[in-house]
Image 1 (spheres, rainbow over the protein chains, first blue to last red):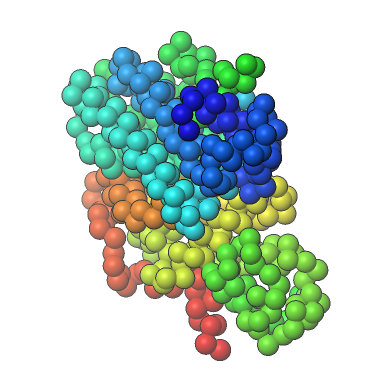
Image 2 (cartoon, each protein chain N blue to C red):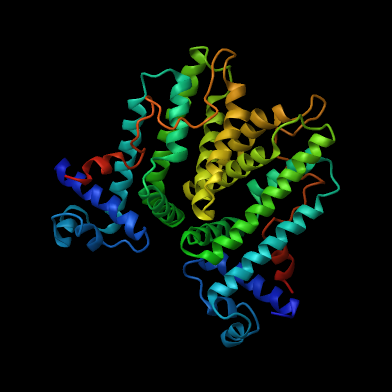
Length: 225
Length: 225
């Protein structure tokens, strides 16, 4: 896979096909149909559906890195707020729900698939490192009280992931708001230094909150091209 | 479905078949093979695989109720500890991992299956109500400081569920211990009244912690019969 434009086109097509068909029913044809390439040309770039999905997970990792870099210049408390809201809510797009459902199907394969698991572990490492970095910077800057950033990061990611999966599988949207409120009341209030605040409400349209999604933005921006 | 012994036998067989085959590949034959009944007799009791799975989810709900009732006489702080460890760790059995993987496959179907979703919502209601009850009793007894039990319960369940799913899909066992430690340090320490303690370590064999599992005990005890 050399040409970044070709890869981009295939990744965008994969995202869209996942949203429409889910992971289990995803075929190479579904992806090829969303590009100007034939299915056989797709297999010139990727040996198998698994190969393609592994590269798609790599692509999502790059999206995470982009998003984390985007907020690097903000204050730690604001970075924490933006980070949590990204991963709790994603974007408003209706695609998000179907995309996350497809991703859950894919993740369910990880216990049986070493390559998927390896990629998902790399994402996990990256997410945790990003969150730990925010917490560490906040301690250094005096915005957060001293605590164990590694464990706090593990707890936050577990809580956000669990809330999203419960919201998704139970179709209980209130899970997200409840968990966000509880995170603020039970964790952030304790973490923050006395003179620092964390918004109790989800910022609906904050200037600091890009309205692109952690997973979907590259796709959104490419969709019309 | 009238005879409780017959139902029990079929539920045990379903549990074992789920552990061995997962949810997606589960067939009525796999279940019948683990009973002294034929596949056609199985369909005398259940119209479809879906029907059977819905009743299996109902059965798991009854297991939750049993477990919750079992610890009803303990002090609230101890009930909280036992509850968290049940749902984080389950039992030590190697079946647990494959059972939870199968359950994750099944949950992944919930966005497409109203009946599964309905049952899973009922489990969610029951779990949350049980945890809220523990937190409320703790506030009444002066063991916990005053807080919002509903939101705290939502946060705890999300965090525990998220930790288990990440442990399962990433094969990262450390997630469970990390999240447990963070729950104790970041949430329970704040919840507990000054003179009440919560074990920082997972109680490996506590007298108050039954060594049966929240989901598996009925099956374990029936397995040899």
